[in-house]
Length: 160
Image 1: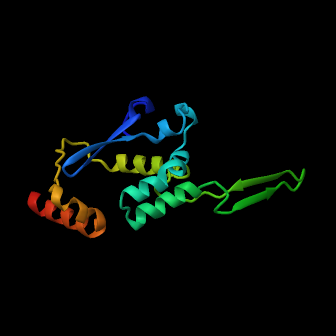
Image 2: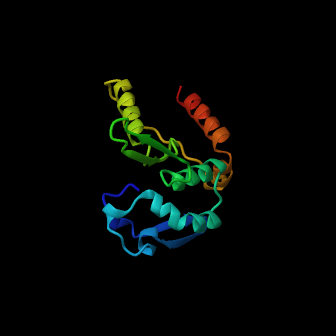
Image 3: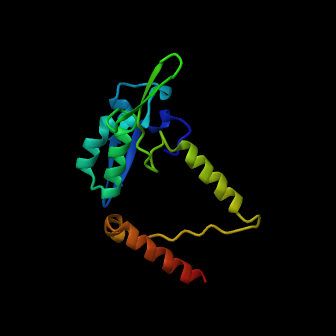
């Protein structure tokens, strides 16, 4: 969430066109669990339906949320391993393997970050930000693949 601790996320501020509304954190609604006890899956399970009703989600966002809620819950099946010698049985719930799931993709994410760091040229660079007018954001949100691609093409042509 971009904060050093969950204590600073007790109230979210959601900015909408022309107004500001305060949204209570799902952590507050969950009864004040300690940071170490809260998993992203619990937050999704507790608040996703309310969030989905209030905000329009893309198909990809909805699919990812469903995968995160089902990850390692048993809803995606399970694997059974039996020891040949002692016949100890180990049952493990399957993970979703969704690239956005922090539960089952943490190792792959770290590998990807390390690979990207190795690609960075050791030279000074400039960080440039191109913004989209507020009036176009709802349109871009519902057509992300096409319009972000156009934004990147236009931005690169502007700089080159």
